[in-house]
Length: 114
Length: 112
Image 1 (cartoon, rainbow over the protein chains, first blue to last red):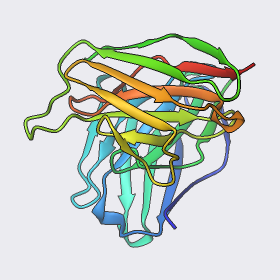
Image 2 (cartoon, each protein chain N blue to C red):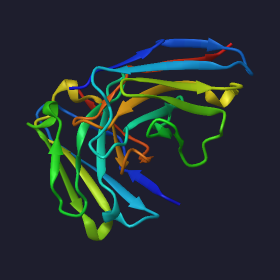
Image 3 (cartoon, helix red, strand yellow):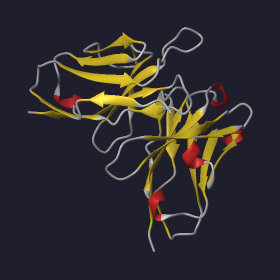
Image 4 (cartoon, chains in turn yellow, green):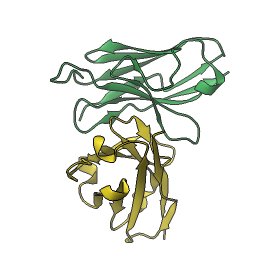
């Protein structure tokens, strides 16, 4: 069955960086794009952008153009989200989702606190 | 960006009753290929979202037919017939016709 398994929770300080992984299984990784979605504590869903799993080209929503990087390790069927220069407002759960949001990872809770 | 206005923000319903959730977009969601990329998600408590309905009215994998979606252009509705306890959570509409994708603010369904 199709699964997206994300890495574990992160506790970071402002200014640090992190890299979240999203490992896909149960389908051909390059058949579907990978989307990224942010959910701040107690809030709704915010779209971050997507990465073309065939070409590796990322496309970012406006709020996520500065410190956010989507990447792939196609041989490992894994997508990554890197966040640089972390800020308190990056505290959230980050989800990966395949294709047209058909399948979702379990989410990674990121806490940024000094 | 396309604004998705979802109502009501919350619902309290008894088991077996039916409910409807409305989602209105600030622009038409008909894409150049003629399809309408309006989807519905359910986020159960403590879980990641799950796709319920895609392209207005198509049931996602394993979704019971108590769920149905209707609508066109800018006005869409999710209906849940015969609500069950497992249906509780937050429902989101999301449009994927225009970039960036945008979500409604969510409707929290509680069971009386």
